Length: 428
Image (cartoon, rainbow, N blue to C red; front, side):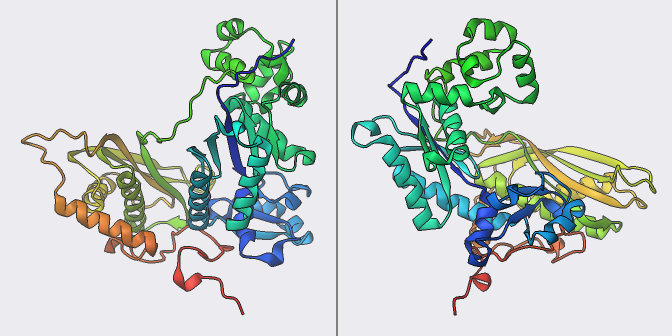
């Protein structure tokens, strides 16, 4: 049975290889032949590994303290998560892709879908994929793989195969039906985009073990036994594009800023500093998507794993008199909420803020009792955001303070090579 091909649409998925680890290696050529791993917040678990590290018995998600002797034995370079570096390099990758393709959908920090319909009429698609790889490697020094196909689900699968099989040299075009059938037959069903472990187990119980077997299933039967979403996946595997490119990201309906503390917090003043930092970050994200918040929540909690102390956690919420994205307004409200839930005694392990009931700045309808945000407030916040984009943390609310003991542990943090003048790499 052949899989029909829809030649009207063509997509590519560009995915940075081992992105966090590749970013850390970019300014450290001495690590080219050494394994590299990146740790999660507070240096807790391994969340990224380079290709060399994947060859070692170091599983993803392993707690750092458990594999520390093994990392030392194999001379593995260890880094704390450097989100400023990763975010800046991700932005540069996406800007480069927008120069290479007519339409780009940013899917994640290290992935983007491209619209390539019509490109095949003037250039071989595999050659175009290699051009993308070479351009990003030359301009940014980051390795990527490219999967090309007539649907987004197939493009995702093509990218998976481009990484897995060296003979494709990082680029795989699945617009060819014979090649597509071959790859589908070799791909486990759990590797299909949107098919998780539990869903894969249910499919395997029906003798659907590969992507090809799922592609050959009847969409109507799949819809009845599973869902419309999985039925759509079947069509996508058959080259029928059901998912369009989403060039404009929808604004988030909720914004959360939360972290576990590097050290337990016992003093209210330290908690006020932390909440002020979190509310400032949340407000910055709110303004970036041109939204206002109508509701604010604050939560604090001790550790559930501390056997020496009883767990305590609480949260409080309020509705703002007027929707706002002003850090000062949100910070004052957050302090009121913290006063409600604070209790002396517990050693707090985590805290956070949640902005809910978001609305667009442009779509806001004001009333006599809830005046719109003032232009002066908007100009002030825009200026603060511009300054902090150039020099992260240069302007902040005084109550936030500097370098509190509660700050996240980052013992192996690399410099902010691309976002701070005083940490630019030096060449001698």
